[in-house]
Length: 554
Image (tube, rainbow, N blue to C red; front, side, top):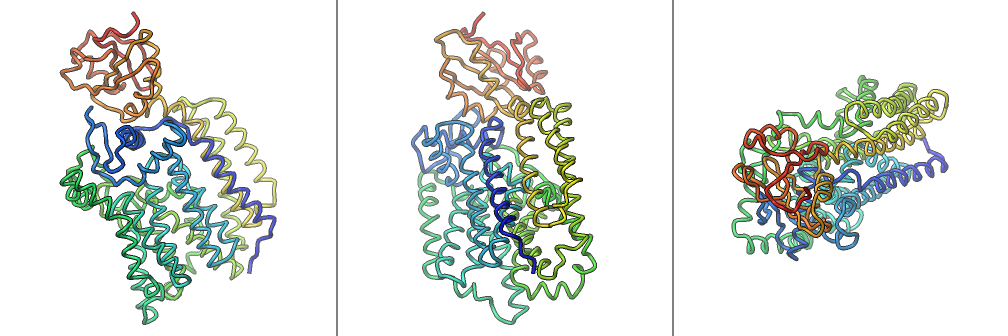
């Protein structure tokens, strides 16, 4: 059996700490992006402003109204972060970061229990260095927190036969997921557990011990105690909430193109595209997986392998978990790429199980696997060299960060060509992991300027404030497209004080605001309504025009 040295394990732990540090120091970049990050950050801020910890609120079409689309757990966490660290990008994103760390701890615990310390390191490293996890763990979105609840449930279920406390955590994990995003948490956990139970029953003739070890009396009570009070209270405060939330936001989203979304337009996807979304989400590991599947195809895709899978409970569980989200979304109509996130911990576990199986058969050190890992490393080095150049040419990226990224990529490429350490698979995996994180960190730095200028409103509001008369209160109107981030950043402006208004077409003619901020793509619409509008400045995608107020400098 392949046993990595203590030195390599220590390096893996250092690598994991480096990934966490890179993500933590880049948490404030870029500014909160519209529409999702801006929407959720402003919802949590409105709850805090109104001192309402029951009903989420949203500034929609310029009017504050209850937000019935999501439960409040993630917003509660954001509000606690706001109270602790202030209202800023970092605090808005911190709950996702902490949730990602929690998922890593759960994965490490499961892998260490099943396979030992080396497996725990590898599972956590693969999870943390997957593209979608790195970026969403630094985003003000709900998906990572939802995944924490689902991961807690799935890890606890698999370990339920080892301690009754895992059985309790199974129901608590489901409850947390339902408080983040609703019944989809139970459905996603069930998409792993139900097929696994049925296949194990078919393969062995009896139900797995985990099923009878769950605390079926106390557990459901814990689940209801976690979820039911808020749902009942929310319905009492907002009659009709339960019907809208369960029927339209959950059932309708997955079955209909037009499901009655009150807060925008859903993202329509072609049938089956969720499987393709897994490729960039899992980069660079998706490339390694494809290469390994091709290299080992004669052994993996056989009847004997399928029979062995049926009798390998951990491998079967990991495989079903890894494909549960794309399988569920295959025929769904409305979703985004972030919906596949709950499958990523399952993929990390699957990778560890396969690594352990290969290590036991001395195949991990084989020529094919070693060659695949080395080419993956070299691909990362080349990508780190090329990506900054592309970002400079196309996305107005920060040149100093891009140059640093190019130099780092060149050094990694030279090191990878010259060194023999890549002949040791676990060392190669460790290096692939750390260089993936470096690549993501440089991408974050390089794209900060472009994204902050074009996908957020803070910079245009900051510039608008410089046009105000001293001591005045500045009003800024947004026609055609209303950025939710403006309702977060606008009230934070104190010099001058700022109010944010959404303008309809009629108001554009005689705007009740001092300034008008319009996207470049909507500028022609503005000038069509009023060709005499006076342009004052351009900030990224935004064009600032004079309104009818008197609080700006001449």
